[in-house]
Length: 477
Image: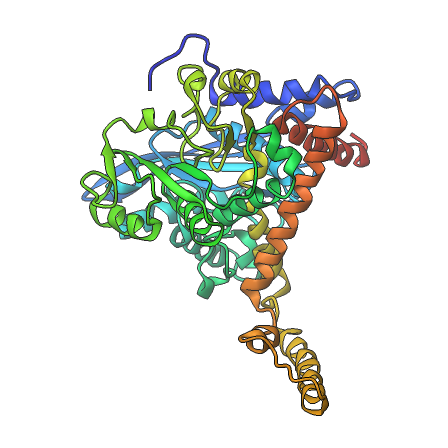
């Protein structure tokens, strides 16, 4: 990426966006600063014997706000991890949780490591030691600090962290709630892997329910047929692209990856493309479309919706003016810098911000945390009772049909669908959809209700900051 003079860093971008919203509020003296600053960051350096020698790793766990506890935020593994990045991500978690009304403060963790350079067994040793360093300082705890997966980590690492916590806290019956994003067999919840991508889909569905909002983006109609560019086909980008293409009729015309981009104007087969990337490590030579070596330039392609779903800062002061998408939804954290945000807003581009758009992960993590604390899966108590009540209605309809002179029958498939009670996955998706709708409505009310608010990001920050401020005030701070 070309360096740009005056480009704010990721942390500066978060602070600038916070400041822009806070300037429109009347917070008590000192409370604005209390909300903005990061409470604490712990840095750990530990050694692990691997491949015949000791390797030293540097990790971080940052707590931005404890207006409510536990604090929540993922752990990412990447060679670029540093304190500023972790603190910026922790701040975003605070505002994200407040916006979707998840009862968490903001936290984040990171380990400066390239996970692709280590085997699964080596990563387990590294993760277990990192977890040990955090657990013994209560920086992983069901009631104080609850991590989750992030870039470079998966449910495998979360299972290791949960196991390490249980080993160090043998009498804690809520040990599984110390971390979310675990595999199902280790206390996870159905729908968690897809959650962030599914949340992106629900966010777009809610946006397109409001024609006047769609018109602000110089678009019209529904999601059906909309041309979409996706940057990053990792977990989030893959699920968002898959659901939008298979369930909403979108055409994913471009996908950008590390080694370039692939284009198909008729719409890419996302499942097949993901299989190719897994097998070959990139999109080069993929037969599903036309390959472009310069993936960054594809961000500027003609489309209706642009979904940056990988790293922060990919849309910046260097390329913002060339971005043609009228609607951007931030599936990643901080993909649009504060400088680029100014340029895009003045162009009239509508941005659905990260603190809302990618909140699906923390929302379903909240459901998993509740499941772990309640020690019962969702749907277990009521599913069969729901099916029995539905059966009564179907039986009565069939009786009326038999006894009536009017010849009518139930629609094909109706009986099977109606009789099926909601299981854990259906309830998780329902809860996520409800959360994304409610959060959008809270932003939209500010977006349309205040003349001094012209964008969804500022609206989202205003809602979040107000909720955090109220929580602190209730505590007597």
